[in-house]
Each structure stands twice: as structure tokens, then as C-alpha cells.
Length: 87
Image 1 (cartoon, rainbow, N blue to C red):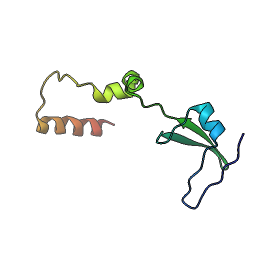
Image 2: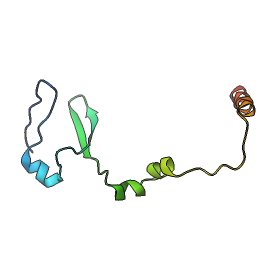
Image 3: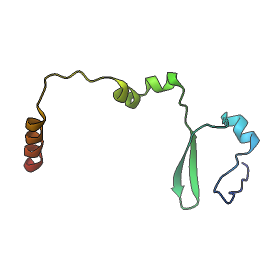
Image 4: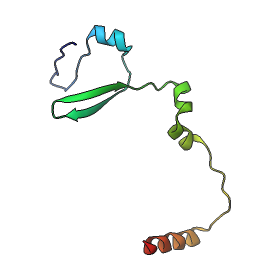
């Protein structure tokens, strides 16, 4: 456990021992997840291309969708309106 101080720009310096143990480097992206009013969990994001390509969300965004059939915009709008009124 180590102590860190928050500066005027709300930055937190991570102690060298913790950086070495968790392999945090300058420029890494971390996620701060609030646990309570006075604590949070820190997760270091691993955004290497190898890891990203295995991520289902990344695959969904970067995989082209094969269109089954073309629906004109006017017809699509009508279909969507009918769906909204069914609910």
C-alpha cells in the first residue's frame, strides 16, 4: 500500500513500486471505477492490437455486415414507425 496526493489539476502520481508491480507505463489508459464515496478501483487497459482483435465488441464494430436485401429509406422508415406503434 502506498499514499499519493491529488494535485491542483486532480492528477494522482502512482508510486514506483506499484507501477513496477502492475506494469503501468506513461501513456497507459486506466479505468477508475467508483466503489463508494471514498474509494475506487483502478484497471489498466491493455489495448495492444492482439488483445483488441479478440474482443467481441471490437469485432462487431470492425467486421463488415453483409446486407441480405436492400430496403429503400422510405420503406425502412415506415417499418420503423410501425414497430414503434406496436409497443
